[in-house]
Length: 64
Image 1 (cartoon, rainbow, N blue to C red):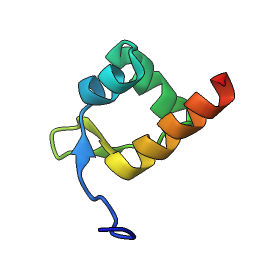
Image 2: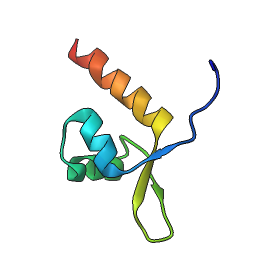
Image 3: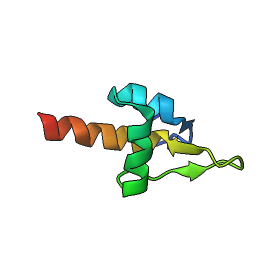
């Protein structure tokens, strides 16, 4: 469905797998403000899938 927002959340490990980096790198990106994160009640970071996709698309465009 086009136009529908993806509300799913990804773990740092899932985001890291998409970018082929270490999960600590994803955490550093969040601390630097490159990628926003949501904190769970336990304090763990989660990332919105739609924002990660936009960030990934931007990373691919800057490499090409």
